[in-house]
Image (cartoon, rainbow, N blue to C red; front, top):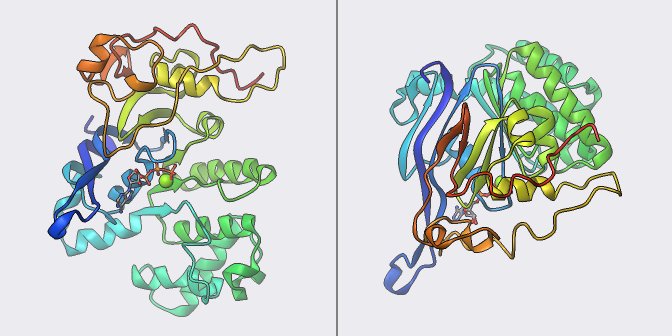
Length: 335
Ligand SMILES: Nc1ncnc2c1ncn2[C@@H]1O[C@H](COP(=O)(O)OP(=O)(O)OP(=O)(O)O)[C@@H](O)[C@H]1O
Ligand SMILES: [Mg+2]
């Protein structure tokens, strides 16, 4: 536990929504609602789940762009809520995030040179412009971009170049931990594999640790050592990637895996393992929050929330009937 590079313990983030009368808060979105996990140095930790389940909120909490409603986050053993000025500066450099939308995270009027060197000065990574330019050029080389992009504006780059550029910007400052929020969602399928193998290569070369966020299970499976599946603000299952994809225990994980398009037309698809739409995080279902969509739900599921517990060695699940749907097709990336 203690050798985790990053840890979350009982972390929650609730957002007030709707003004209500007289400015009172009408309701709360429980975007993240009691999440605990640790990431070991050198790991790629995959966080997967449907849109709105709280993945990006966790990313924002980890870079301190948001403060938690409850719980504790630590990096290198230090509580993020208690970093002094010096530690904070160090933290800003050592923890980097590549945002979900690379276009939105670049200033449309700023050249790529400026975009790359500005953080180097802000975070005091370099002392002068020559050192900054040299570092920016090295970062470009790492991601396979030509120096010629330095004078361009964001809209003058292709989607793939923009994605590489934001990766270069994150790596230029020399981080130890990098959060990748949907790193391939903005590029077309033909470029996705290229970007992913670049990220894997950079991780090896730079000795990085990743938190990889995606709703795409194929991406998560390909990249991650450990995978956590989120549903409505909570982790419902967590295990090594191999274990999770071959022996899933939570009906939601089984439903997600079964929904991966299988190239083999002979393979039978499991229909309707998850019924209906995701409920609103403002009005969470009673008991197990997945019960309203679970075909196996019993009375206890509507009444009691199942805790996340170790079901097999290193394999955690939050379900009253783990394994009930596990006879469904395991996902085999080779097929
Ligand atoms: N600032 C905010 N104020 C109110 N609600 C918010 C805020 N930020 C996020 N939410 C809500 O919190 C929930 C989780 O959002 P989040 O962006 O973390 O989901 P996500 O898993 O990253 O989704 P996606 O896959 O679409 O990126 C959603 O219901 C979202 O609408
Ligand atoms: Mg998101």
